[in-house]
Length: 194
Image 1 (spheres, one colour):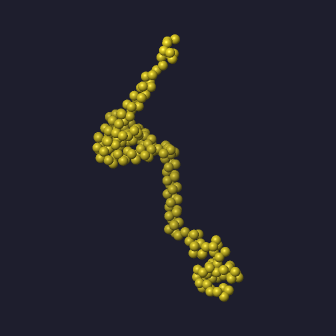
Image 2 (cartoon, rainbow, N blue to C red):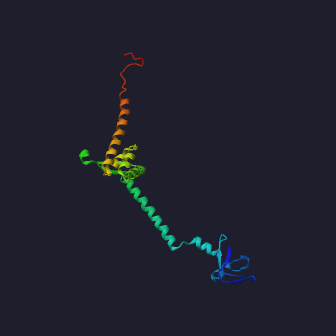
């Protein structure tokens, strides 16, 4: 326990000024001196001003901490609500996309896109048409292509997204075709019919 002078005072023949540390052996009744406002009892070896600044927060600090806590709680509640409604599941966002009126009769398609796929789609939408079409040629994500085709109104981007989707599907169909073409005929391994 340390004693800190709150007023100029004298103990044991020594003078102490505000903020000075007073050896506890010099003060007979520290509690009474604290009640009189002469000294402050500081624990853990800290001065009164330090303990007060550590123990108490300013109104601005409290308001900031409360605002942060409220914002975090609101965000957590919104995420939980989105997960319960099926709009957010394990890092994906559920996006309803309206199809072309001539092709899909205005049907809605649901795309479960990751934040990275959404970011990629938005990045391409911000490019000029020529750069966007060039960037689309390197995309392998069906979700990005669907989002671009549905959201971007530029014909160049729509055509590039449709062409890249056709390329992706033709590659996957040709690889499936080669596997599907290898059908067993019931022959034994030696090639002799039984």
